Amino acid sequence: MKSTLTSRTPWHAVLRIAAAVLGGYMLTWGFIALATAGMFALGMEFHDAEHLSYLLGMLLYLTVFLWAFAAPRLSRVWLVLAGGGALMAVLASLLQSQLT
Image 1 (cartoon, rainbow, N blue to C red):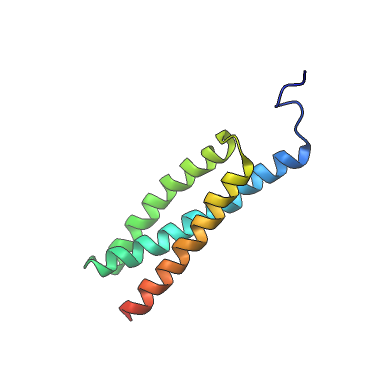
Image 2 (cartoon, rainbow, N blue to C red):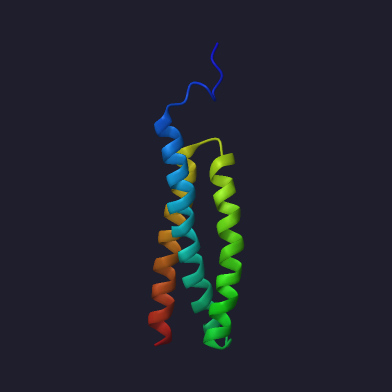
């Protein structure tokens, strides 16, 4: 009986790396946009909100990058990272349009 690690194709590794790098970037970008808009809406100065969002975004990126390799299902990784990033970007855009 083959182990699950040896039965995976090289494409699986490429897709997992792409999910970690690109999906992590998408989720982090969506988080930074939403957090900046949200903190600004709550009364924080824009540049303070932006800097705090970037700092938290770096921690988030590291976390989701590592999680992308530890998660058992690649489809779930893509769904959470790309889907979550897109959802947060849309919410940030809606919030920003309400602020201006």
